[in-house]
Length: 264
Length: 129
Image (cartoon, rainbow over all chains, first blue to last red; front, side, top):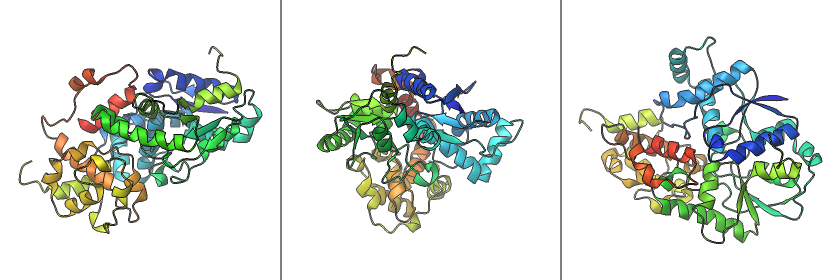
């Protein structure tokens, strides 16, 4: 199965391993990720004001590009995923926004949200299937207690993202089980890591990180997995001492599939 | 801001929020991860917008504490979407000339080797224009 792929700025820089393991694992699972020929940073945060048009355009260009390629667009970074999916839903639902975007970008074929945007985890769940993942596992994480960290961007707003139950998600737990490990549930798994506020007030971000990490530790987690480089940063760089270690889910997937050391 | 602009109308227009739907149950504030950092908590924010106390909100550091995590928006039983009001009031401030809360010049001293690019882009988007 072929997909178009939007890595985003951070997967090309600080989170190269998140990208590398995503590509290696997809190849091992028979999914071909074709990077969009030209893409710009998604903008990192979804602009909520209705009159913000220009700040949503880079996301729109990626969506148009995926539409032109005719393949489902896969993202790995939670933030890119949030921005791309919400901008795409805006194009479907908001006629004023759609008209302005098409007038400004003037694509050969007008765009009205035809691209399909999914997260890599949705690809694993809905397209490849966790049973198929399980069959390809060569290094099982059996006996390892792993906690899923969803944060906010994968899940919310639930109606727009339509990713999983926003209050009781299970896709990452199902992923954890598929690589042989035991998922650990804890209260703070879908609360915010502190996000960009780390640049405004580091102490606030440290408080958020501590709440989450303490909650996972109290539930007996030996490791936490995330999909988001900013969550990774807050849960490691802003963590208290002795906190539960955090890994990208793609790293565990690549290790489970035995492709972690493959040189792409 | 100049007196001829109705600030409340602008906030309602760009946020698309109707604060009159709020029943002051406080669930948004109860679930807000930045609650302890805010001078005006999300449910108060909604009331203050409805009362037209926009200039008070514009002067508050609470505007820069919201994480845009959408917890208040997701969990509001009335679909009020407080985060959109916070964003709209913040935009009223930073869209004014010289009122960026953070600019590119502020970034170098905040950098550390692990900081992801998305954090910088996100902060500049939220705190500046």
